[in-house]
Image (cartoon, rainbow, N blue to C red; front, side):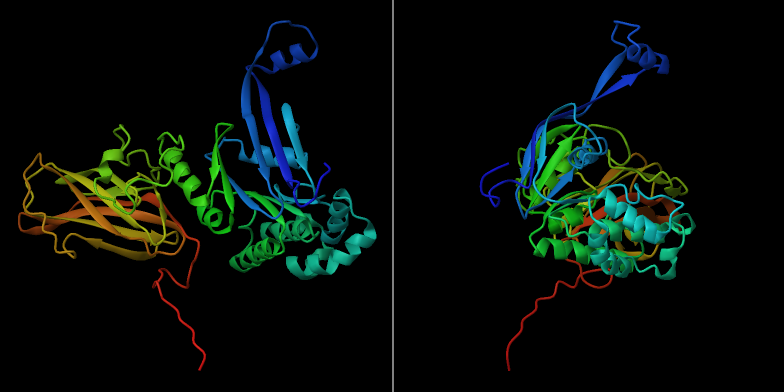
Length: 434
């Protein structure tokens, strides 16, 4: 590519297009292949449309976007797995790709034989693989199974070996597609440590992930794709904000990426999309446990971030709002509205209700409707949680459950720093010499 190597981009994407031909019937594909028809028998689907960007040497760049936006297609084109329809792709440096782990493995071969097979496919001589074999075996840590056919491996052992082979070839460019969270928690920690090691060594990293915490923590820059089009690129925080708009069907035109209103979350209800669904367009858990006697029912349960944006992705350390709207079908003396966060194992982490918060709703008549807003800081660790809602209270002198929606919403907490346990104590640390 010429020029000073330090100034030459590690990866250059220029006006990249990838078009797939979709046929209504297999016979149409055959007729076209044999030249039996002059009529166009397919319609075009563009996985990528005129995408251009550079990745600087030593930079960590993330690619985000909803499913079907073309993220994985770009990585496959860079690594030569997929051929572009038009445009140019140039990579300057040895690439290691963590795409479909184990795709080049022969299931009949032993783990050791597959190491040498994959190393040869990557362009290494046997001597070069010999130099790396100890590191690969130590990283995979599957013991004597290395000499057994991989068809006998558990899924965990398989991905450990595949990851170890891919990541221990000392690449200049690392390309990753949702491959860091493999194996058990200890192996995941090892993978992330290796990832950090690559960054500290000045390796160039390009990766796709739905884990917004990893995107925020590791990336110097983020590219946002939607339906094959590159919408924007910039700071991780700004791109994550735009991405959250896409997730709920709002336009992500790049305006207001820094957010108007700062940490003010008042009046959040004004940005709910115009639709009638219970969750305002946020993904609803199909396994929601819903029950109640029916004296009242929820008409809306949603969450807003610190900018008043309807989203189920909340940044750790930021204020956010949980809003519940309740319609009363009968006269109710003392209603109570509650929410609860659980982890994915079902353990209740935290929650509160209007009674604990000493916010008396007061008696309600049939036909009344209220909006209850809980505003607070997000201090949970980064990760995935389930949010439940309940409307209970006293009816004719007895405690009743009017309506409950258990685990209806998934909430993703985005964090660039996690501590131990379920929540962060937000400690301030000082060190002094004595």
